[in-house]
Image (cartoon, rainbow, N blue to C red; front, side, top):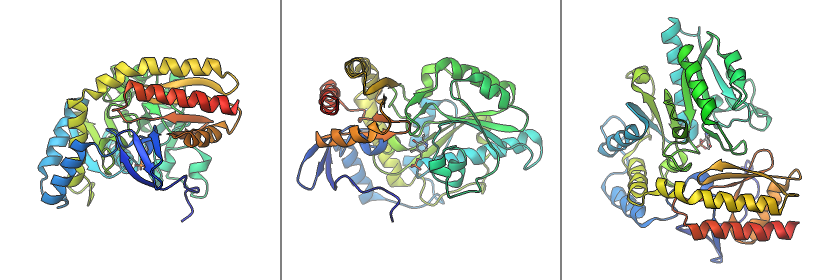
Length: 388
Ligand SMILES: *Cc1c(COP(=O)(O)O)cnc(C)c1O
């Protein structure tokens, strides 16, 4: 169908930070399939783990216990804190599960179904394309044509605690925001804002649910992006980078709320299959063995600095540089320049991703070396020089 624009080229092979087309042209991939191939393309350890698992057991359904899934859940709990994990297949599905959790929480604290169910999300958010995800994504380009939206969503302004304070009355079951807004143009939630939001949610008996689908699993230089703030959320949604290229999503829910889901209240045929769990366990193995979270944190300041120097060199094209770790956005001008720069970069064999509000996004694999980060700056320098 025609829901995607015309494709740039046919991608046929990937290796590490590089993607190859049919003519074997090599691209430096700073899109990573939209923040998915977190350990690069075809990492040998990931490939070996997948090959072994395919030949052992691919799928059996959640009617059986799946040792790899249990192991993965334990590892995510070790990162997020005492709680439980539920698996699914995508970011949108993870967020659907969080929105269902919010309804169960509202019922629990109000004593009746349908009494307390409002979710307060943020303007400029992106939470996926399902009806729940769309309703939490207040953008015409996402919602247009699909109304009526699911009932019960209100929106505050990211990093404006007053705007959330005003909305958090006793109709609200949960606050739901991205720790770093991705599709909306790379806007990090500030540490102070998250801390105040945590306090407000606790005071008003409202869940704090964080969408870490894009910014999680090491990308920010912390395992979860919210960890820079020291807050403890009630629930987390994740997907994209978790499987390193194989579809998997998950929610983590703190112990205090994890019993809201009871046998029969939610389910999935594919979620957390032996193969999907093997993919995610391999990603976590590689992240640990190569100390990738530490490496992202160590490598990114110099890279951000070099990108900021580009912004000073091309003030007519670059407004500012935002982000954390290996999740960086360059806000451009004039209007529409992000699409031109994306195309021009591709012509110089650098792949990047456009985002909302005239932004280009750089999302290299966590395995990107300092040389590769520098190479992205060199190519962008040449792109901006060409377009100047
Ligand atoms: C990509 C994304 C989603 C949707 O994930 P899918 O796997 O495409 O369903 C949800 N939230 C955020 C923050 C995302 O970046």
